[in-house]
Image: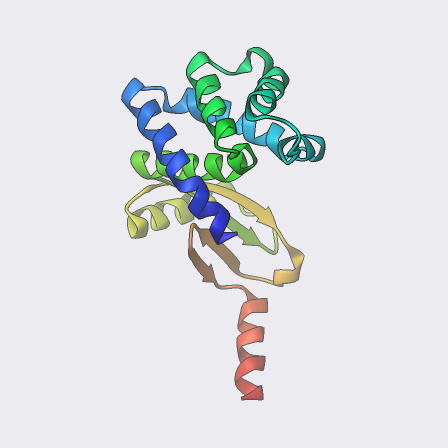
Length: 178
């Protein structure tokens, strides 16, 4: 996966810089998300990996699938990706574009897993505390996972805070076996 991310990085940066200069980050992200979703479909993956198709044929078919949902600059961008045989990278390009946008806007998405539903005030306190710690605006999404038994598991980008009972039991079991 690291290789795909490395290949996608210059394309994501180029799209981000162009969209940023034009003040169209949100529109570009929406269009890239659609293009990435289309590119991830199994039949489209087969189309994008078909060596019998020229780059022009590939881009024409792909743009045909998007219809009127891609602006002229995004269509040109997708043609460049096709010319370089990089359309299969669209999911990674979109993810990296979204990360660059979030970094620019100083926003971080945080996933909170808990054994039980969290009340709104608890989510707000978690967001406030993480916002101070990460120096970012925090957008919290929460899910329940009864396997945690209790406590919380918080994921914010590369940062993981495991305060779950299951995590503590796993650490205890590891300590006892060593």
